[in-house]
Image (cartoon, rainbow, N blue to C red; front, side, top):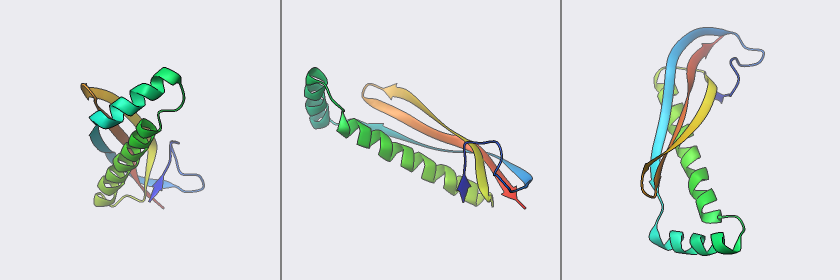
Length: 104
């Protein structure tokens, strides 16, 4: 499966637009992580636990989007984008979306 942020796949012709596909996940922080990351925030530096949490969330959302595209018989997903939103105190949704297409 080809995933791209561009409108088309270079050197490939789009023969059919199958529609929008998406994948999402909602992840919550944990109390232990909040305490250690709160201390890190005071002294400065990267909040590595949160970086890992968001990175894992992006991968999960991408995988779910790709699975949705495969169910439609797509060869690629173009115009891939990410959105993030808070849904509860300490929890965030990560959404990946794009347009599933068939290629020649």
